[in-house]
Image 1 (cartoon, helix red, strand yellow):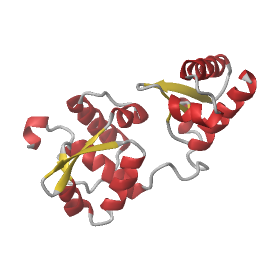
Image 2: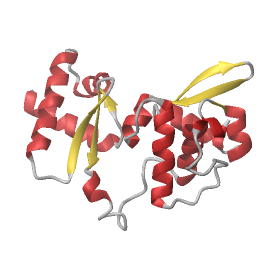
Image 3: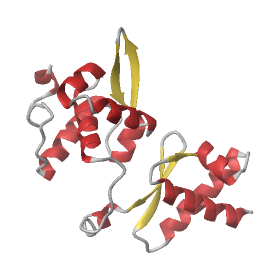
Length: 189
C-alpha cells in the first residue's frame, strides 16, 4: 500500500494545485494513521529533493504540503502557463487586504467593488483569509497559509513591507489605494 499511497498523494497534490493538510491527504488515501501518512508525504518530499526536477513538494506550517514549480523555472514558462489559482481581480482584492489588514470587509467592498464579496468568499475557502465578526461587518486578515503560499513572513508588519517591495520590484501597476512603497506603517494610518 505504501508505494501506491505515495502515487495517490502525488496525484492529489498535483490535482489540488494548492496546499493540502495532512488530514485531507489521509482522507484521500484512506489511511487513518496520520503519522503514517505524514511519513509517506515526507518520503515523497525527500524523493523530489533528490530528483533533478523543476517541481518540488514544500512542507508548510500546520502540517500542510504543496506541489509547486521551483521558483527558478516559473519565469521561463510564463508564456504558456495556464490560468493560476486566483484571477487578477481576486489577487488585487487579496493584495489590498494584505496591505491594509486588519481591514473591514465593507471598506474592501467600497474600494474594490461589490464583486469583492465573491473574492473574499473564495479567499476564505482557500484558507488565505480569516475574519472576526465586528458589529455588522467582518474584519479581515491574511492567514499563515497566505504568507507561506506567497513566501512572506508571518509577522504582519514585515509581510506588508515584503509585499510592497514585491509590487515595486515587479513594476506592478495597482489601483489599490495603497501608499507608495517608501511609506512606513505609521504613515499609512
